[in-house]
Image (cartoon, rainbow, N blue to C red):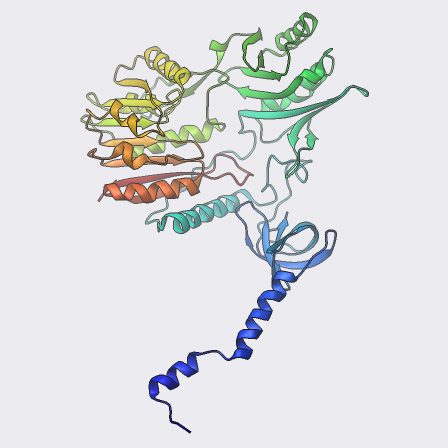
Length: 475
């Protein structure tokens, strides 16, 4: 028999036998063909939490996502859907509970799709969210965060100043369902109170329902938006057809009785204000060291952050991270009505200039009006499509050294082309989607910037919604 060389012997030892390959292949096949019929009850231990807050475990080698379960728990669960690569289930019984489990604060929590994490104590919710953000930054942007700042957290109840409710009317029984959509379904979960809404909004749910069901054309109301402004509640009725005079009078009387502004909004038709006027909508922002808060007017169609207390802290942190100087030329992208630009203009030393850019011209006009009303002459609002490289022409003659951007969920793809060639020193990126943010931060590093620190922002307690702020500085 021929002798093998040392190299041949080494290669032979590293080559798996055919039987070993077959066993591994068979194991993979076994996992993929494991079927769990809908309705089957299983006992399972959960090792992790998924990005949407479900417990994750393995049953006979197959990944199972269990709604209502937490990491470290052992539960009995019922299969709700089976797929080739994974199974979905709903918790039935907690056999061994996590130390972080608490009783939900809402009686319809198990069916309502508004919150996903009320069974997890608030501090653990924030820990989960920060870990999810870190994983997205690492996986998509190859970013290891050098410094995590303390998360921004405020009250976990009564915080939501804006919410949209779905409606469905059954004419035969004169029954109106009004509430939030069931998780994963179009079904409406009726609610008469909501612990995460601002108290004034929650208190309005029952009387609003009772008024709507008395309309002659209740079915024309497709959904409702509730909005808490500074000292005023606004109710927007989204209607498929205009309300008749009697229905208008009924709703006007409701609005007057409960001291709310009320508007009917129909597609391609001017808003019909039944009580109150649009200019009543305002919120305030304080700037450290200034006794007079900013007043921010906005319309029912404008974007405003849903959590007023967290938004105030968010703005304060952004100002702290930017370290504004008298020589600064500051660019605020996706500025809206001036949520960040006006505080920056007020906090900046004399000589600094802010250029605020937004794609929606109505919000640009509102931002200009807000600047004038607050006596700020060092900020300019302009309109530009920030998803087009040509937008950079709006500021190419300026030497921009500091930038703040708060883009929509899709992020700011192409941001490098907008900022290329500018003498950037600091960039603050605020995001409601860590995945698109990770992509953009990775691109921004090509401009000589590096991620210095990141902070989790708990804008939506009891939900899996992720808000985050990152600071990039010149290397």
